[in-house]
Length: 323
Image (cartoon, rainbow, N blue to C red):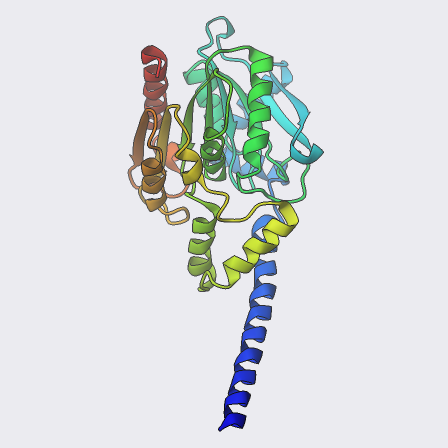
């Protein structure tokens, strides 16, 4: 009986070791797959084609402003000393500009991918606009995608650069998908007074929650031990873990106004995330708009007039009421 017990114990230990080693290997794969994608906003020409297909004429609009010097670019030093790229454009009527918008792209995107929002802010709302390439995206340096968490520190640098360029006392940060998460994560930091409002579009509630959903949806895998292992790998490599990177935790500290936007047919960042995010913001003014029938990051494409109206109304309310 003792021999049987000892053998069973050894067998269980061996199984546990094998399972742990397998989880570690899958965790490394998961971390690489998520944070080191082959395409990470580096196909600028390909994205120009995609954006033009979605919004015909927008590349001609962009190129014309680039050609006459209205649309410019620059670089700054980001977290860890990386060189980060950004572009900026003055309001359509600079003398009467309403403020400045910092528009933040999503996962594996770049400064080209949300020209629709740049044009909305510039031409429809008369805002100056700065749009960055986040760490490891587009023309920016960086060793891996940071999923908004370390990006929030770079976002503060971009905010300060926008203020340096335009000098406005009314700045709104607007992000989509991972950019939405970056916006929410930034909102919980100690920010200059001229940062007056935030607009987040289809951002996830936390990196952990998003990856847990992706694991089940795409790979039919449980979160344990894969996600736990991947999170440990991420902490060792990049200094942060998946649970730490929480939009909800940052929103709990945010006292400035925020507009939450989400498609009610989003099956990539499930619509349930916007309710978790909205509820997590317990201080200050907030609004929420669900875009009818819209999939992930498609709210503006499906409802451009309504989208613009919601943003315009929200920002006017923030300004007029001094929220």
